[in-house]
Length: 74
Image 1: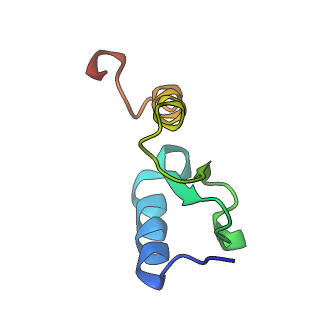
Image 2: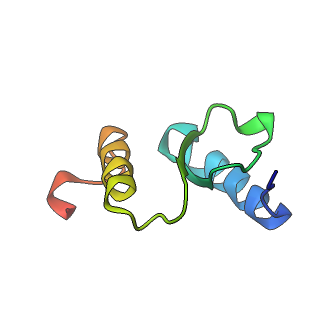
């Protein structure tokens, strides 16, 4: 089982505190264990690569739904 490096967890916490949990998206490779403190953070799990079109589409959809990504920016 994988686990994020401490600096990644620190930065995730910083973004959650600065932007709010509703505006943070955590990209997580399948099989990575995330601490329970981050249960409320939106997480997208991918298998091999984030650049797979289906994963990119899901990320865009989530960012638009949370109003982080403007419709005109795509």
